[in-house]
Length: 164
Image (cartoon, rainbow, N blue to C red):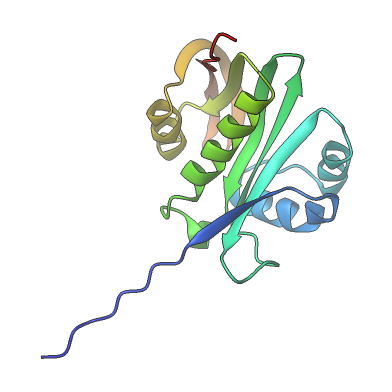
């Protein structure tokens, strides 16, 4: 009996570029009930406090499967949004993007990273908890969904810096 060949797509993470705005907007629309418009993405991508990363299949530099946008002010950072195209979910892209965020923030000597997440987004909550985030607050009714409103959980993780 001949063997089976299983192929697993590998993904590469790159810094976000200003000209990624259109594709980020498209992925965001497929990921959130109330997506940001293209002008919002353009404004974020030209703000010097904003940084982020895209992830795409190796060998296909124009293909973006997911992204993360963050803001860093002094030593405190916030994840503004993270989204993965539905076709590429459950393939480890969110984990790769979060790894890139933490590497960058460590280099920038940031001390804390905050985010908010829909209390019903179990996949995102699982990802964030796997990175050591803990709940520090709640915004009742913050997110509007197709089923009404849900709370935003405010989460935080300390970024360990070595004494030096």
